[in-house]
Image 1 (spheres, rainbow, N blue to C red):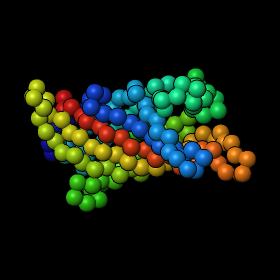
Image 2 (image 1 turned 90 degrees about the horizontal axis):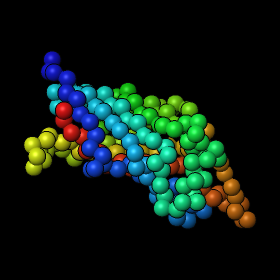
Image 3 (image 1 turned 120 degrees about the horizontal axis):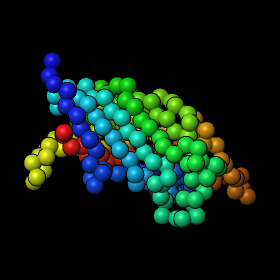
Length: 177
């Protein structure tokens, strides 16, 4: 059995974005700017990864101050009551060459649900400062209503203003400790 290796996220080289359909004709992109993550692996084998990811909901930005304020309000995320979201892995299995399926529990808006995410391993490399880094692209979808994010409005023609489906895209780089 190899020694446990700890990895911490490199926020300067990581990002967490989401996309939601607006009026069912375009996507609005947003991101969370403040987050933290730690991973434990056996040696450098990410197939054994135990992952914890935590984000500050108040760091949400969509490039529009008024919309960001609405998202932070009780209509959506209710940041006063639920300041953080967390993801804790329950499984990380190989799905193909460089591809993995990440299972876990996402807690958002006070609700915990199982989610599955697709992970593409970018590889492990040493940076110019001698730090060993591992990079991953993560993607998936959730239904916002599964997490009690139920705010909705309809257009004059009966169309939805905001879709229920939210696409998640993250680029994460971890530093070996």
